[in-house]
Image (cartoon, helix red, strand yellow):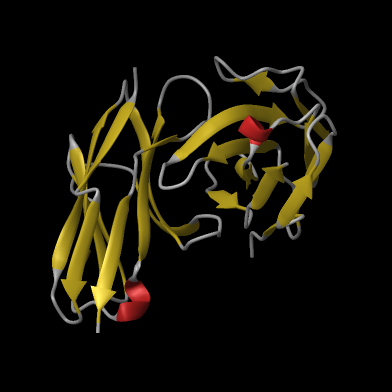
Length: 115
Length: 111
């Protein structure tokens, strides 16, 4: 149980375009979802926390107008990188949690390359 | 500010050579300490959650322990398939549900 599916697993986009990443909880309802960014050989850095039906809470230094997060249902959250630039190239990972007291399940990650 | 420090940064062992990974933490009040395994190009895979000092959990060749200041991940007689990055994370009692991660330990087991 507790499976999180993340798509796409990799994407290449041109500079200036937008790209959307989906995160789905397959067998549970996720009241809270988290989006992380990971650079090579570095740890996970939390970008934002989203609760179903509410606006996302962004970590300090993360541009909310650039990284749009939508958590419209209890099983789906999306991260849209708007007007992507090469410095946005990274590994993006989502995580979902059923409720307080439950663990955190991670998606398989999305490798974004902006050319 | 909540902080997690893992050591060593990288560790190379021979197959069968047991060792331990360290996770030191500073947190306002620990709600839970988590260990994950991450393979290259993949998301973290859950291993253990520890909640209070003195707690221990085991899974196959791995055993996690917790004190008030640190956690250890002991690996006994490792195999090459145990090679991965091991991540430690804490959830503070106060504040949001977010996890704070350490930098990870890259473990390589040579056959």
